[in-house]
Image 1: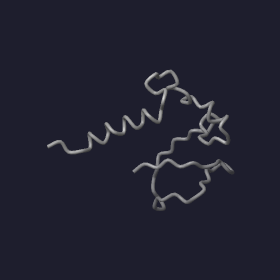
Image 2: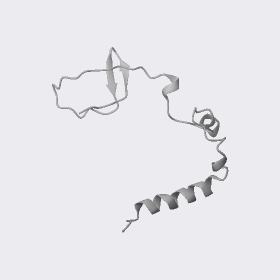
Image 3: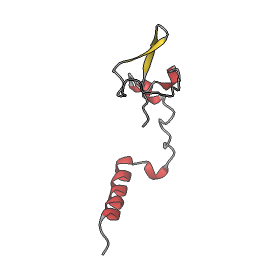
Image 4: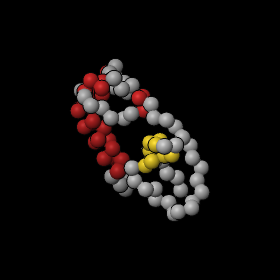
Length: 86
């Protein structure tokens, strides 16, 4: 069993927003990784989204110039693979 929880250091201890789902007295190994500004995953605006490293990563793909058509074509292929071949 493995848990990843986010907490804040207060008064020398770590405080979680909810109690941990572990029995009292459970011995654990703790790995502490401070959250940095780069690790946040929320975007408040489209401008923030456009600065994410993956934004525009397929912009130079000629086969995806019409992305809705690309998705339709590929969904058809995906459906064909799911259909049983007798």
